[in-house]
Length: 101
Image (cartoon, rainbow, N blue to C red; front, side):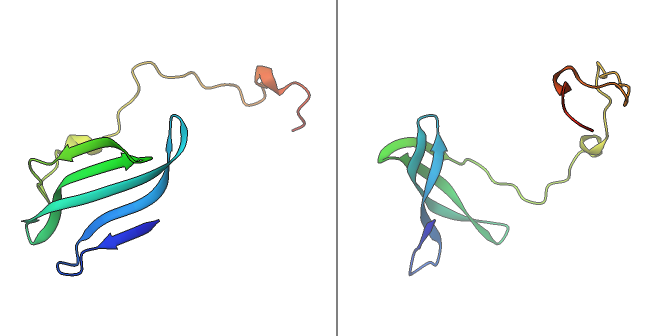
């Protein structure tokens, strides 16, 4: 990965790296700009991603909120609606024929 930093602002403005795509490995360039102050932290509100030299995606951020209170119910463990029955530990799965314990 190669990172590019603006010499004046010291903001990260781009990164070049190899990423996975449906067609296989792709040379990727991701750029960031339109940095804005949000609670004392600079966030890029615009990013563009290129894969193999072709524009792949462009994102415009509308709002960044930091340190927002979370609903406590998001941390509760939920039981699955259709629990999977426990398998007898001595029972071997069908694909384990010929596999030693």
